[in-house]
Length: 90
Image (cartoon, rainbow, N blue to C red; front, side, top):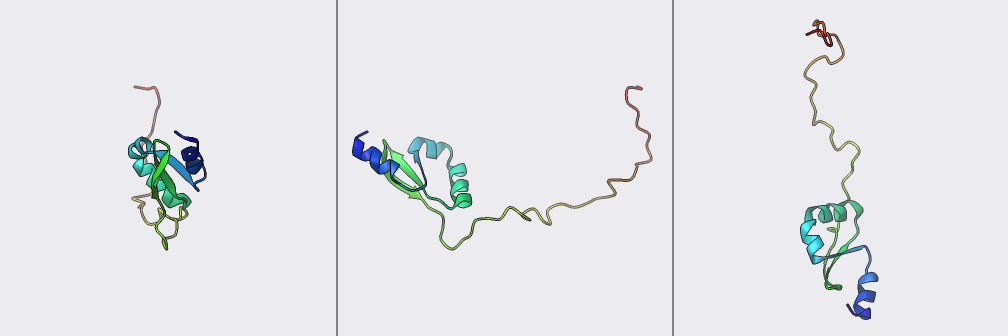
């Protein structure tokens, strides 16, 4: 890798990855771009060849309340069952 290529790669905003790393972890890379809203630069032998950027106009997903409405309570989970439990008496 030449000095000029190294300077170009290190001056790019966000994170940079090799093609092999990006290929192996593409799902996690896309999740990171979506969550952090920062671009990821793909490098081939230290030279930038592509960039994954967040889609404009779509805000980052909110974690608070994201699971609302996905669980159901099927019964009383606090009251005794009416069955005596014993430990070690088999």
